[in-house]
Image (cartoon, rainbow, N blue to C red; front, side, top):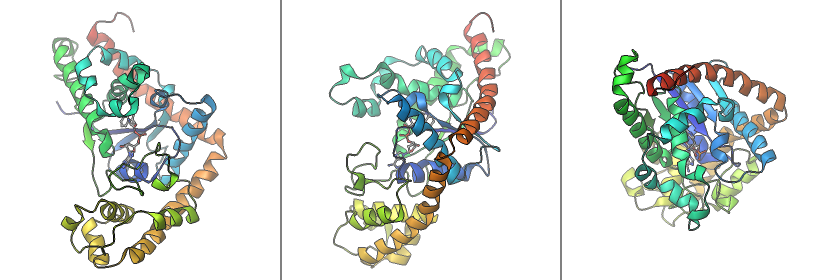
Length: 344
Ligand code: TYM
């Protein structure tokens, strides 16, 4: 059975949106609007899997929404909302908790990283996080999910859950006239030169919100001076830039900066090396600073302008949630019928 193409993705409101979130995800969200129906979600329920100060959670939810809008997501043509406003995400997550196997969740590397040594003390939500993520996607029966590389394993789990649901309930799905398969197997869209942006201090570590050093990342709200300073201080090696991409393989810091430049400019790494091969880092960094400031500067100022008007942001989220609910409740009603829950 073929499913109508629909894009879904989410971003956690946990503070400090950075260049990795932008290049690996949000910039891709923007591009997909031209070809697909898109649903973009601020996943506040996911954020809660580790402690969030309530007032900070609300502030960060509005800030991620502002980032979506400032980057060019159109909340009228597409749907922008926060997860907790559509109860069906949690409702479907329960059904999926009974479909997913403990062994599947035990393999999730992100849980192991985030829970660290004190695993006994991690929240149950942090453990079952990928089940809620599968519900986010499948409650809209979304077919395509743009994400950075770090989410690949979670997407595989979402596919496994969809597949097992379709198999376990095959008879009922057909019996109720829902075709051969009720859920699509969502495809990750992990593409482009910046699917894994690395720390500016260490080219072998992912750029992340939780890195204690602010010099490791460029935040979307950084001003021109901060961007310039962070790029100037970014770790490099002593060689000039190579002429071909293969030579970047053992040079993680060079590879990262070239990837960032390519993604910001919408070209390939090979294009960047055609222009800068043989150049010293000082020359390349100066060009990267100009480029980064010209792309990120306007986004940062628009975000700051938007967050000053929380009533407007809240109205965007409310209207997005209302439209999301229509789709989600239709899916949930069918799921209830399929699994044998009585009533509407
Ligand atoms: P989150 O909030 O950690 O990150 C949001 C998006 O940014 C991408 N990303 C990166 N991409 C490239 N380089 C990096 N250094 C980098 N850091 C982060 C992430 O891959 C992600 O696409 N579990 C998700 C949120 C989520 C979700 C969903 C995503 C919840 N439900 C349903 C897709 C579909 C997360 O924690 O992303």
